[in-house]
Image (cartoon, rainbow, N blue to C red; front, side):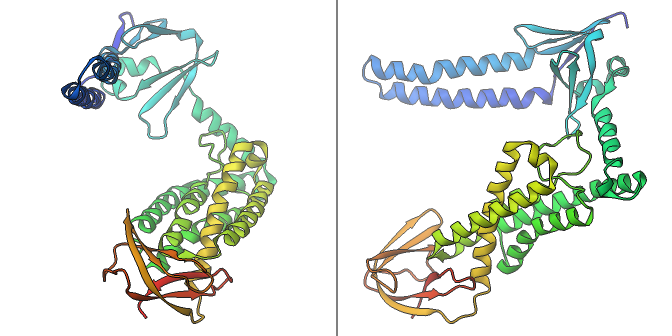
Length: 387
């Protein structure tokens, strides 16, 4: 290659940054105009300029960088120009490249650790530019082969190196469908959990599936969030993260737990014990503090949602009924708050939260009943209904 190759983002690659900058500038301009229209003196005018001018300059600079930025491939070096200044990596200093998970970005890594990001779309229509990178190592592939070598030497995963590698490859094939299934179940439980019991059971079973796979493969999965090729074993952290977020929200949104503090205390103990058990099985969790802390937080949420769900959904005891009078109704977001007089363990007026809007509007002085259930796990919960 004798001539330089200039790779520039064009067409739709520029649409979103420029459109975003324009929209943000228009919003700031609207704020500026509204403030100026109401201005009476220099202080409001200065505030208006304080809103508009810095944002307009910032978005203009970003749009210029998006428009003028380019990659220049020379025979002996690669130069990235962002519209104002350039960075250079000599070809002899390039150690290799890494691709993003979706295959849209190439990260060029130098021997001293510097990284230069290049959109792979720019190489698709230029064979000469694509050939410029052919001689460099694929660092992801090298790391993956090294990780598979470590897997083949792990005696926990099988009796022979071939069986160990085959087991990990099988798990990697399963991790993709399991990932998407987890996301689908999460969206089902979040948007339309009907029937509620099945949505709750499906979400609660995801961490159990991950643990079962780990036990059956004798440590073939990971529980940390460090995605990448440095460890060939698939990570199933999503099977803990999403239920830890959605499971308690499903139950606490629908029902009122009277003994909530006691339930959370037990959930904290259960989550800590489960996190400790996973750390014993997972080498990556033992080596890194933050993944362990995050895992404990996820398991705390999961334990709270699991225990509260079992307590409410499988409670077969007849609830105690307490007739009360409505003292007021308040609506906020997705809840109706009905203020009622003293009942059962409440010696003062109390506010009962009900999801959604009331089908039969209640008025001050109406007579309703609070139903208090003992709970399958002895954590009392209650709701409001007709008498």
